[in-house]
Length: 564
Image 1 (spheres, rainbow, N blue to C red):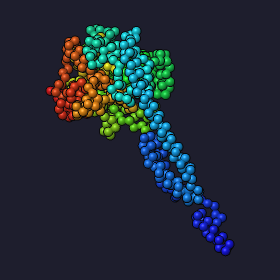
Image 2 (cartoon, one colour):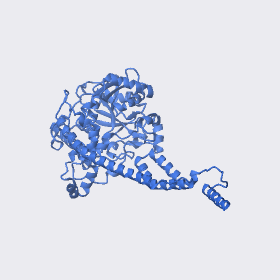
Image 3 (spheres, rainbow, N blue to C red):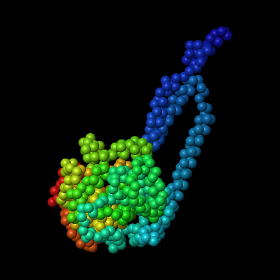
Image 4 (tube, rainbow, N blue to C red):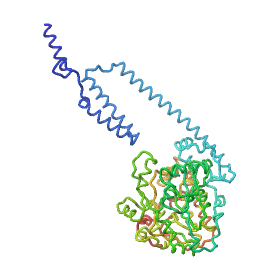
């Protein structure tokens, strides 16, 4: 009896351990007992680095399967399962954590509501203050990022509450008399002074925020030995900027002695979404000592031969004869390919991909690794004939017979003198800050030629924060255009100037009025009125689309369209 009982226990033990011998050690192959567990864990690990939201979704959906696999594993290893008390304790803890999270979210929602109101009131009072130089001084609370985010999360209409700089009027009531548009470049030499070929020289002019100061090292190397004037948006002193720049030089390349001039504009005087791009451009222009300038934004690298081509005697002779000659340098772009975590980690890789000559660039175009800059904005560079440019030799000039759009905003070389239109400082942040200068140049008699054998190439980087602010209100606008009644029932009467884009449009409309009524027209380059309905895209109009399909037919890489 005892012998049979012992034999039964031995057989039971062999079955539960999965071994032929009662003395064999117990082993469990987890990859066999729970293959779904390992595949799910690897999927979660792979997804975590790419998208936290996707990671959360996979983790939640995978949890029941992981639990089942874990229970199966315990059964096969003869480990006792959790007791009901333990399971109850764990479930109770989860429920308690969820309840606490809901309470925290409710508290934050109430807190954000009051904080948003506080920030708005501070902004309104701050808009009436002025600095000694006449600029607006915004309170620290307005420039505080957390306050801005709270207002953004609550309502897009509350993003931009400050009034135009130096003004106390709301945007919807301003006129061009309030905006102080400038006709001349103050402090520049007279355009009437005669020039000879030997007098013509060039300065590269640009502006940059402190975090992108390192880009100037690349301009120094590509523009050498020419002079560069850069205005930096920072709260640091010029001396501090030089120290910081010397660190960048050790990493990315050095400038020549006396090649670079740095000016600073204090950033504490401006809100997060009011980057004073045109004030910075004008500040950099004021440091120019040469007869002519080549303006680029800091994220556009010039071709290394640009300065030598501009110094060609034929080019300089044309500049000496005509104070209102502008040479357009075609702008192209390459896509972002770096997959590293931060922009800083991608710098060396991106620098190596930037083309150095036209042959290299055209090879990239044929491989679809480079295109005309911002092809989605056909008006922005559509007046430049990229097909003609591709067939031009270095130093060749081609007439731009007309301007197809008010949105035309090329980068160009021109004489820096009093009649050179300044950048209008009423425009801050994203939108229409450069195209208005081209409009004024055309209106006051400039002729535009495009220059062959040279180029600018946009350095790939993440979008600026100002672009996100520019997009605020787009969904409201779409709803309003599709069903105005429904939009007004949802949001009430809509004042588009509460959005950044509506504010810029209002300033632009007033600029056009000023140009028409206050600035004598001496245009030598016509504007094609039938190609683009520019005003149809303004938010202050009743429509938001081209009046015809003509605009859709134009592309920067196509042949130049007729000016009629």
